[in-house]
Amino acid sequence: MSVVTRFAPSPTGYLHIGGLRTALFSWLTARHHGGTFRLRIEDTDLSRNSEEAMAAILRAFDWVGLSYDGEVVYQSQRFDLYREYIDRLLEEDKAYRCYMTREELDALREAQIARGERPRYDSRYRDFTGTPPAGVNPVIRIKAPQEGTIVIDDGIKGRIEIAAEEVDDFIIARSDGTPTYNFVVAIDDALMEITDVIRGDDHLYNTPKQLVIYGALGFTPPRFYHVAMINNEQGKKLSKRDGATDVMEYKARGFLPEALLNFLVRLGWSHGDQEIFSLEEMIELFDPRDINKSASSYNLDKLLWLNAHYIKAKPDAELIELLKDFGVDLSDHPKASAILAATRERGKTLVELAGQIRLITEVPAAYDEKAVKKAFKEDTVELLKDFSFRLYKNQPESQEDFHVEMQRLVEEREIGFGKIGMPLRVSLLGSMTGAGMDEVMAILGVDETIARIERAIGELGVRN
Image (cartoon, rainbow, N blue to C red; front, side, top):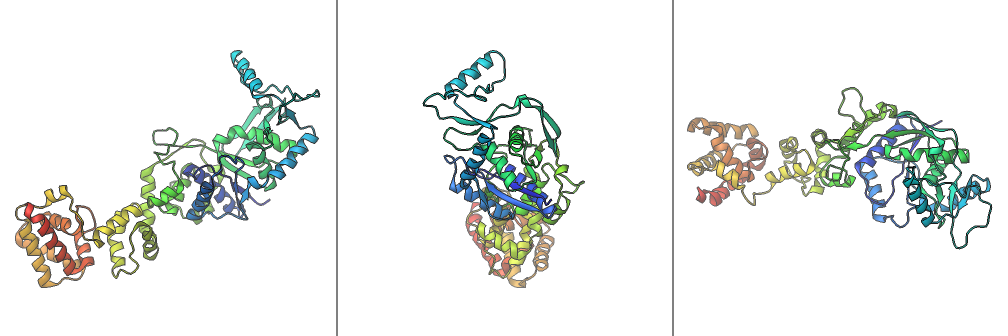
């Protein structure tokens, strides 16, 4: 049988990285086996659904490149189908109408807690044959097995046995007729012929209920893989502040999709000591049975390191296109390749890279005060004027030529390199950060370099 996996988000909020990791694991499992990966939108909670959230989920999939097969399945369009299966279970006496009110259920639970018992429905309407109470819209409950064990053969956690009595006759349709989560998930997974369900272990509690539904309807259950959660670096649940934010926020912050996917695949899975994986390598090597049982730890430094790696490896043309979203357009710049060569190692994100590029391509609008104080001394203006004259006289062109001019000044003046390097950097870039001075000057050319030096002298020279 061909492997069929799925990702099934609810459109009640953004897609966060925990969900994206689950989607990635499912996608890789399908692609590894040459199988099928389906996308299902679990939008049965009509009061909480958001068109914006649904669109954001689809945008995130498009950005990271996780292509799904076939049409997107929307549960909200399948209510008639779910109704058919509810009616079937009622007809086969595998489900029943429960007329217990909310007040009665609350009273039952309070009494159970007072006796030190686990709160649970007491199946009082399981075999009810009397006259239904007036004015009560019943829920539909499934007849869960009352003896034996429910077995989960989990691909990550191993064999899990649960006493059947631990699962009560849970609700499969609310009083207004809408089906419940565990019911529709089991129906859809069966009808979509899902063979492998990979999801977070926060769903482990749902699995016995879904197995009950599979059994009642005679469906073959899929293989389950429950993945441990992602913790922050302190070992606690990942919060929005730690990184559990909208996947598209990572795009806005200048991360590349291949870096994010590489980062996520290593959160809970490994292949020896290898850290960097192409998508093709992930597909070839990934096996959900190799997913770790323990929780993984989110590490922003690792993500930044991976992102820097992929930025360095990007062809110039692709990088130029990506940078347009961050306010930098080098597409018509005659020295675009030189600018990227001078800056791509200095940006861990596209935001940082764009900032480094703007230092070169834009005349400083202001000068960093701390840098000015450190760089501009009593003789700085005279040194800068001397250097400008040398550039005007000798007209250097290459990076090496500009370096030679700096070296000659240092030797002839018998000064340290920083004596000219620091004020020159502030004059050209406005701060102490940025690419090497010889690279920057070769990009700017003699005229622009001199113009920036003269502007800095005019604004800063009077202060020192």
